Length: 483
Image (tube, rainbow, N blue to C red; front, side):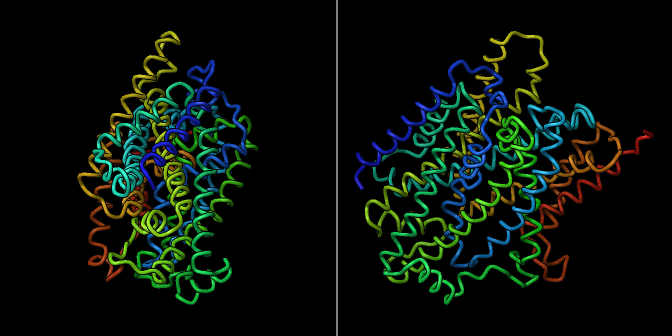
């Protein structure tokens, strides 16, 4: 595919985003930016959140892991579904009852300012690292398969993409993102479905025939009964519950979209519909992974790709040009939701939770200038993190992201859990220390789990261990309220 065609695709796609941003941000103020004036349509939020939840990690890494891990990843998705129901019927009612703009304001009301800022800081850290890792994954694929051939340096690629995202989120914020995510989700799902169709056509198989071949190879195995394995069924499901509660229910980016819906029942409908669709879509991505490896077996190449390189290799080098075009569109659509919502959420959280922008006696224009300065600064931090990931040359991005979530969201889950299900008050000055020590202890337990537990190898359940250690520390520095 020529550079002119690819450049034209990106330009047209970005122009469409700018048009949507211009329409949705007319007359927008800070309320539009932070929570979309609470008038977002629930079905648009549900559909757009599919793209945000999938991102480049699902688009690239999940299909690439099928050859070694079969369909075991679906165990995690089942756990995610259970966790999303907890978010819908436990956390959303709380957020709507308190009329929160930032969900971390709850920690301030329940415990105090130190706990509020501690929780916010862990979100800022986790979302910055996780989102920039997702962006890096997609940018690195674009760089290796396309931009290196044009002589474009990686830093220029990263800077240009972030600048493009700034241009269409700078004014409208959440109100704009709800609509742009809808467009991006559509192209991502189109790329997924059509790639499976092209592979089936190339192999002379129906979809049913494809599933049959994958089943014969053992790729469709979902349940792992080996308790020592990192992908053991019980571990994956429990980890999935934790990850979805933490990365959805306690994440300002995802909840910012949910609480932009006018009413609680509509927000809950959004969560249920989103959760069901996500089950189906992840199953399709796993099917795509099996199909990609089946296609490679039928059309072997000199340097067989593996992991994250499988999808781009087959789509850009082995399938018809239309499939390559769809792959580029899907890849770009996976990139933008990973960044636009994260940058907006981090801006909102920093302005509201750290700077207390809503509580300061300053004019609306001063608030807007501050918010835009923070927005730009967040993009610069993202650029630095992306360059750091490039320098580290990370191989397994999906595993790294889930590990980051386990270490950084643990204190958030513990703080919210203690607030919701106990009547204890915290000695505030010790909260930051407890929340920093717990991830460090978790790291060592994870690292030496084989030696400590007779060969048992910890996987993503290290996140649960982090919660337990943090809760134990918080209980030590707390006392029961008399009332």
